[in-house]
Length: 198
Image 1: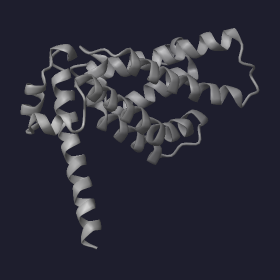
Image 2: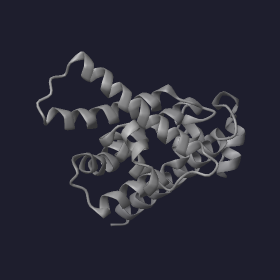
Image 3: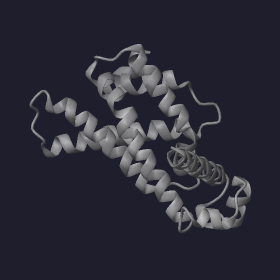
């Protein structure tokens, strides 16, 4: 029994250490370019020693990749189901709150990798999520996947990621609820119709 308890404690300790390292990276990424961040300043900010860092990551870039991989996994596990219901019009207030929490909890990732350290990987992953969600909705109407559909999917994906980028990097961002309402309105009504509606 002691062995199981020790194993659980070790796992929690590792996860806590990784959280500190990742929080330090995201903080530093909002202030400077990734290639200028040193292991020394990262470990100092995280309150750990270098050997602890290297027991989990090979270098700063490996850490960055793991942060983005975890973010992508969380997006598909947590955000996509709620977004799907919103796109389908079968959502509840709970879905809106769930999505608001997701955006708020991952604001640091958006700020870190859509700003000074713009990462094409994150942008591409966000595009793919949006395109797959929209195409699922389009596919329900038996719309064939034509060249025109591909262009429209690209347009919608670029618009969504541009809005999220502006929101994440803004000094005075709109609330997450307003963000979700904005994205939903533009997607379902079109940008010009949404603007004319006032």
